[in-house]
Image (cartoon, rainbow, N blue to C red; front, top):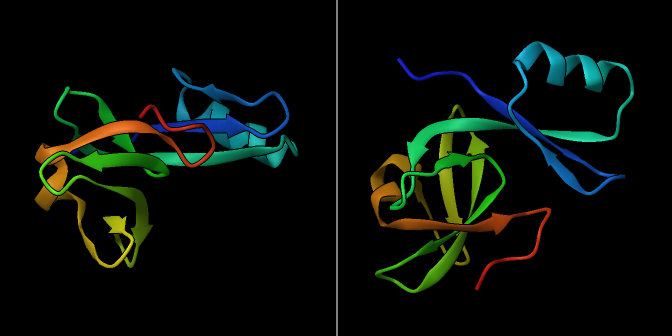
Length: 105
């Protein structure tokens, strides 16, 4: 069973908040903090980095970018023209940034 982890993007300070327990992240939201909460997918990219909802990833073989989203109970890599279950392609992906940050090209 995968570990449930979360991170949060602070809209005002423009920083990614990581390393906190889920209770902290969710209490910030209920206190009105301007954050966007992102969940760990349970998958890792080619460099062993944890893939989170909202990550921008690069498919090395197909040379195209996707956004990781959670839709209909599962994590998906959403490319420009199609979508695929994240677990099917995670071993070919490299994280390049998030939807909130600039991509590392």
